[in-house]
Amino acid sequence: QHAQLRLEGVQPPKHLGLPEGVSEDLALRSENLRLQLNQQFKTGRSRSLIDSYDASFDQARQLIKRTHLFGEQDEKELDRYGRHWFGRRCLLARTLLEEGVTCVKVTHHGYDTHAENFNFHVEQLDEFDKTFATLLGDIEERGMLDNVLVIVYSEFGRTPAINHKFGRDHWGASLSVAMGGCGIQAGGVVGSTNADGTAVKDREVDAGHLFHTYLQAVGIDSQQNHDIDGRSIPIGDPVTEPIKELLS
Image (cartoon, rainbow, N blue to C red; front, side, top):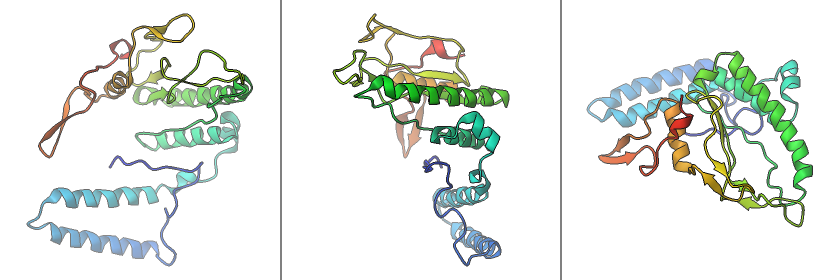
């Protein structure tokens, strides 16, 4: 139910349409036959596995009905978002959110600047700032911001000091994450580093705190447990908790 679907650029997933030689009428008759056989097979058997099997077919069928999402993008919208890959992907992300997709991830590459950090960032940050601002503005304008949690993060920070190649290397001691929208207090800032940014000085948090916060923001009690085959599995890291200052 919650498996990811990776998209290459803005193209639809491969093999999304019906196979060559299979008409919509034939596909519908095949589906009706499958449902009849499933109904007979359920008699006297556990329904959970069969229901999961049905759900996977239903998800695939719903996806086939949404091929229109991957058509040509509006020229005026592309001018607003930018005609680079990041702009096209963010425009598609907005479309997916409008269609009810519950989780969308967009990647912006090019920050592994071990050399020529400043030259690369002139282009990268300009591209990100304009496109992200457009996406966030559209989400708010369409009345979705109260129901969409927006997170901007990277895998780690970069060294506060510049190396001999005018670049920044990997730095795990301190980094920042930006959040907004659903369940998040606007304008909130939690934690700070020392003067040169090499270490956290105040209110250190880790991935456990962040995931508690993400889940709580969208209405999931992250401090409860799942029961999986009789095993009680914590939803969030039991030794951490949500960042309460950020929750609205």
